[in-house]
Length: 110
Image (cartoon, rainbow, N blue to C red; front, top):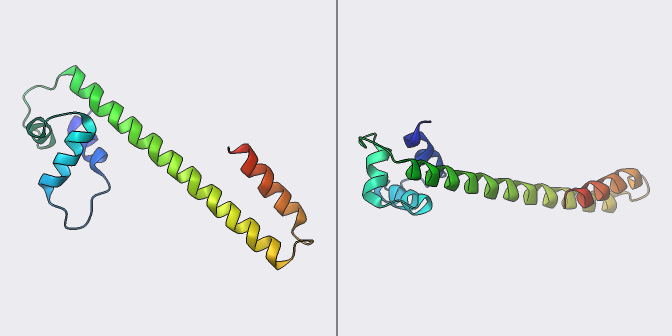
């Protein structure tokens, strides 16, 4: 596993114009590393990377992916709710089957 690459993935998204020191500082905090240790790994200068450091970085990355998945699911639920509203406003009788399917999908996703 490329640990530096994992750290950079953990640092995303980066704001435009954000200073690299701020990015590394934030990433170090997320991974449970010191700034200097994160800096060394980030730039490939670390002579050796401890197993515990790899585990911390992997755990932080898994947490980030889980958070992103929850956010995406919430966004999809919101979009489905908006679509249901639009369909019911335009012609509730015509879209009755579609609305039922949307409601079923929303119930199953919770």
